[in-house]
Image (cartoon, rainbow, N blue to C red; front, side, top):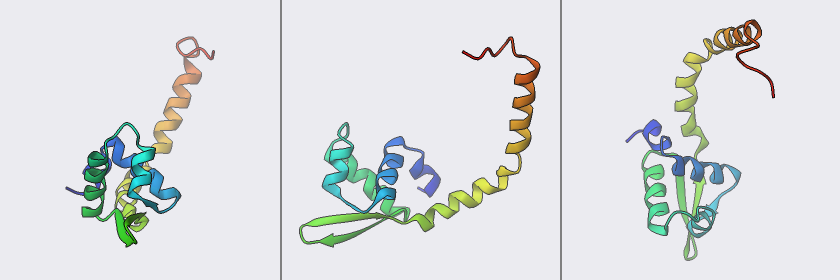
Length: 107
């Protein structure tokens, strides 16, 4: 599995969002992701560790997880190749909306 496959899963993105705020013990992640079981959260953390998006360190009886934001650069680098197309498409959308106000009423 690569970084892209890992972040394709919404629950793993949610884990990354939580870890972007600060380091957290596994139990706290389980509390925040209350719709997931502890084993499911552990599986997501294992996958995120395997692709290098998360580091873990022991602290007493707890395992503390931290985001490795540097690994997100792989995604940023890939996206940046396509960023040059966005303004043109957004400009075209803006023009379409301006030309067809009856199709897109503001409510």
